[in-house]
Length: 283
Image (tube, rainbow, N blue to C red; front, side, top):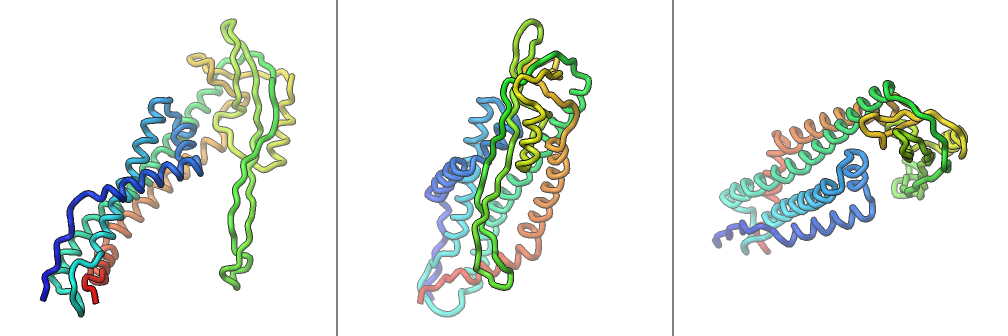
C-alpha cells in the first residue's frame, strides 16, 4: 500500500496575500473598519494608519490558516478504500492545530472588537458626564441640514416560499449641525449636538435640524482643557450608552462561541470528521 506523503509545513503565502487583498477591498467597499478605528475608537492619524495595516495583516493570517486547513484536506496519495488510521491521526493533529489557530484568531479579533466598542462607549459616557460641568459660552448656528446614508438588503418575501426575495433600501438620517463659538478670544467651530450623535429616521433628523436653524443663538458647552471639544446638549446620550451594553454582550458571545466551536468535544468531533473525510485517496 502506498504511504501517504507528509503535508507541507510551508507558510501558505498565496492565501496570506489573497486575505490581505480581500481585506483592502472589503474596507474600500464597506468602510466599516475605517469607521470603527477612526471615529468610534478615536485613533490619531498615525495610529489609524498603523491599525488598518495590522487589521489587513491579521485578515491575511486568518486566510493563511484557512488555506492551511484546505491544504491538509487535499489528496496526498493514490489508493482506494477508507484512509488508514495512521493518516487520519496525523491529519487530525494537523487540521486541529490550524483549525484552533484560525478559530482563536477569528474569535480573538471579534472579542477585541467588542472591547473596543466597550472602550468607546465608556469614553463617551464619561465625557458626557463631565460635560455637565463644562463652562458655557455664547455661540450661533452656521449650518443646519439633513444628510443620509443608504444600503440595500435582500429579504424573503414570504417564509413559506424560500428563495423569493426582494430588495429593500434602508436609509439612516443625520442632522448636520455646525456652530461657531469663542473661547479666550479665539473662534472655534463645533459640529456635535451631543457627545455621541447617532443616526435616526427622517422625521427625527429634520426635527433636530429645525430646532437649530442657521443664525440661532445657542449656549455651547466646551471642554476647558480642550476648547475644540464641544456640545450643545451636555450629558450622556443614547449613542454613548448603547456601546456600554453591546460591548460586553458581544464579548460574552465571542467567548461562548470560542469555547463551543473551537475548544470542545464538538470541535474535536468535527476535526476528526474532517480528517476522515478529507479524500486522502484518489480513485
